[in-house]
Image 1 (cartoon, rainbow, N blue to C red):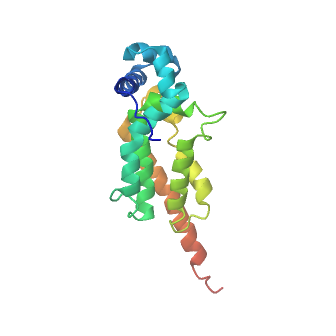
Image 2: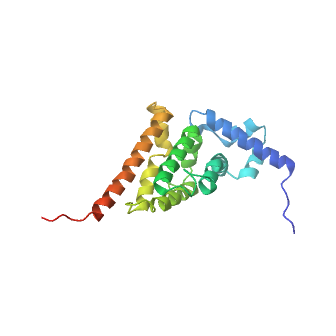
Length: 207
């Protein structure tokens, strides 16, 4: 039996709900203030239609986040350097982190809302696992990085949405400065790894 296509009104409602949620998260003072009732009202759709389309608030946030992030993920999986898979690992690592930081600066409240949907930790979410796995695999190609798993966690901590919100919102740092600081920090991490590798390979001088 052929799978039934969604009705045209259901497709329209879904698009309207995503657009309304996108606008509400962009304009809110606190992402926790955005409720399902708010989204339904802004979209001009009944709450029942909202729950049929997404199930719950977490699913709505995840789908909206994934839709906003999709262009970056396409660039990562099939695009050119510096984000794409053909880029040298020492070049790709800072490019991946810069792309994530820029995305979170542009979507601060949505990113905060998504990180808050983890069961008891923002690290137990699909999107975090996906980016950690990617960064770990790239880091393992960088000379001198002996623990790609931990290094990936440590670098991703620098682009957590709550830290970005604190630095950009509470501390008032602009996006350009944050990106420059992250680039410098990443270079130090990778440079230290390379230096340790070179030191370990250097011949021991005679006494």
